[in-house]
Length: 88
Image (tube, rainbow, N blue to C red; front, side, top):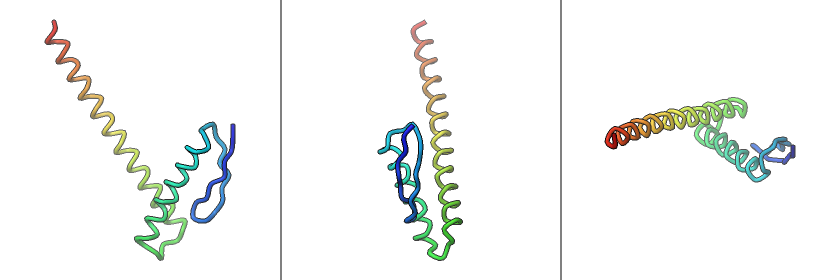
């Protein structure tokens, strides 16, 4: 397990994990950007609150992605069943 230093909102964090360093840096950059987006829209927001709002935004993206994936999976299964019936 390796570790990599990242910067989020000007603070240094040491992240340990099995993922490649560049991937961890990419994640940290994404999180930093999301927090900064919140702060840009609401400059007087406390950093902790901005972080929580960014986390909710990221969670929303994840949930929407999962819903899309499930919908695509069902569509593929339905199309596959249609094709199988055509060849029977």
